[in-house]
Structure formats: structure tokens, C-alpha cells
Image 1: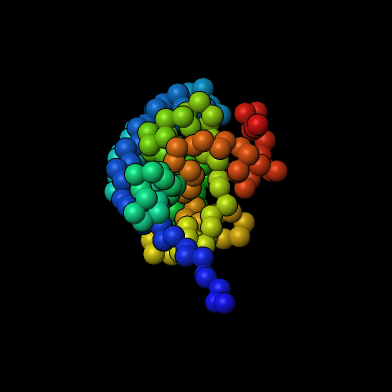
Image 2 (image 1 turned 30 degrees about the horizontal axis):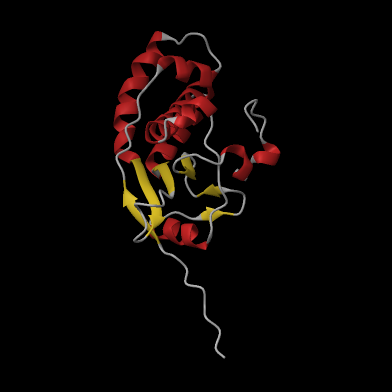
Length: 181
């Protein structure tokens, strides 16, 4: 009697439109500030607009089952954004932190527009990716790290829709969120 190998379902990576929106109140909350210097404010909008060309978003879903299995979403900003922020950081740590927070705000805004239920939770649970998701990351030029990150500093990977919440999040044990289940 021969053993049947369980067929692994390949995850198709389909580009999706990510449309982040700059929200001053959310950005200020992320920064832990109540107001911004006018010069910094004038630099935020052009950077936010420019960085959108470096923002990638993909839906990862089983081939042939996309209608019944929404899968996951992966979003990230390219390395040139990371390099730009690092350069700013070298010149001014406070400005570097402001633009670091802008990049975080951008990916979180984009994922919240794709999965509006995240706005209520305040975070995007990080599921442990299976072999299929890790293979899809590689096809997209990303590497998965065992620490629970991909090879881009500003990235989000989560289920679509976000149905599991904290219960399936890899970071649950280390999380300090007041929303933790």
C-alpha cells in the first residue's frame, strides 16, 4: 500500500491596492505627542506621498480557493524608505523617530483600509506562517525570520479578515496591548 502525500496548497500572491491615509491624530498618538513643529509638519506630507510608490500589498490565498478563503495580507515598504529614515536618524535622532513613526503609520493605515476591523483592535495579529506562506514571501523577495518578522523593517502580515484576534498572534506572550484577549 502506497502512502499518499498530502498536497500542499500553493498560496497565490495577488497585488492589491493599498491606500494609506495620513491621519494627524493617529500619527500624533503613535508619536506620543500632542502637537508637531511646523517645519516637521511640512516635511511629513511630501514624504508620505513619495513613500507610497515604495508600498507593496499582496493578498496571499490558496490558488483556486480565493473566493472561499480570503487568506492573508502582506504589506511592506521597500528598503529605500528604510535607508532614507536611517540617514535622517544619523543627522537628527528626533527627526529620525518622527519619520520612523510616519512609516509605521503608513503601513498600519494601509492595512486598516484593507481590513477595517483592525481600527477597533489597534493592532494586526501576526499569525505563524506555514510553509506555503513562507514560500510566497520568497517569491515576493521577502525572507521570514524565526523571530516573527519579514526582511523589511516596515511590514505587516495578518489574516484577512482579522477573525482570530490575539489568540493566533505569535507575539501574544510579549504583547503589552490593553486589547489583548
